[in-house]
Image (cartoon, rainbow, N blue to C red; front, side, top):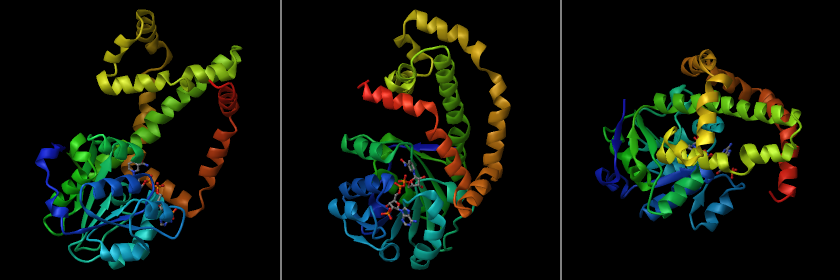
Length: 326
Ligand code: NDP
C-alpha cells in the first residue's frame, strides 16, 4: 500500500533546468515556494492581483497572473483552496499546460473525486505534507522536514514518480519521509479525521465544558483547564513523540489510574457505527457531492453552522480567560 523514500534516496535532478510555478502564495504556497527556492530551484509565483501578491513580491519572487505562470512553468503546483481549484484549473491552467508538464497538488480531493482532469499529456502528482504550511517552512529551516503522502495520479511521461519525489525533496518532505501511496489513501484518511475523529473530540470538549459549567465552575476557568492552558496540546505532542499510551508515564499515577479505569465508562464502541457511516460517505463520494452542492449554493449550511459555533458560550469564556491574561 505504500513505500517510504528517505532524503538520500531521492534526487533533485528531475527539477533542475525546469521552471517551478507555484499557484497561490497562502499557507502551503508560501512555505513550499521558499523551500524550493532555498533548494536552488527556479520558482515563479502565479497569483491574482489580490491580498497575497504583494507578500510574494516582498519575499523576492517574480509574480505573474495565473495563466502566465501555468504557461511558463514546467512543473505547476496548484496551492490554492481546494474548493476553487476546479474552476481555476479549467479556465486559467489547463489551456496553458504543455505535453510533458507536471501538475502537482498538495491534497488529493479534486483528483480522487474526479473534479479535476488534467490534459492527457501532462503528469499529475500529489505531494501532501502532513503539516500546516508554517510547519513545512519552519522544519525546513531547521534542517528537518515534514513527512508527506506522495502519489502519481497520471503518468504521461513515464517520469512522473521521479518528478514527484524531487518535489518532495525540494520542499523538505523526503527528510521527514516521502510516503509513496495513492491519492485515495491520502484523501480518505484526511477526511476521516476531519469528519469523524475531530468531530468526536470537539463534542467531548463541548460536553465537558457544559457539564462543568452547569455544575457551577467558572466558564473561563473550565476553558482554561480543558484546552486554554495548552496541557492538552502538550499531551498530543507527547503522544506523537512517545506513543498514545506510553506518554501516560508523564502523568501522575492518580491521573493514569483515573484515565484507564474510567475511559470505558464514558465513551466506547458505540461510536463505531457512526464512524463507519462517515467512512462510507467519504469512500462513496457522498460527502464530496454534498460539499460541491454546498459550494454551488454559496455555502448556506456552512455559514449557518459557523454562526452557531461562534454564538456558543465557549467564546465568551475564552474572551474572559484572555482578558484575565490566562
Ligand atoms: P490558502 O487558503 O492558504 O490559499 C490562499 C491562496 O489561494 C492565496 O494565494 C490566494 O490568493 C489564493 N486564492 C484563493 N482563492 C482564489 C481564487 N478563487 N482564485 C485564485 N487564487 C485564489 O490554501 P492552503 O495553502 O491552505 O491550501 C492549498 C492546498 O494545500 C490545498 O489543496 C490544501 O488542501 C493543501 N494543504 C493545506 C494544508 C494547510 O496547512 N493549510 C496542509 C496540507 C495540504 P489571493 O487571496 O491573493 O487572491
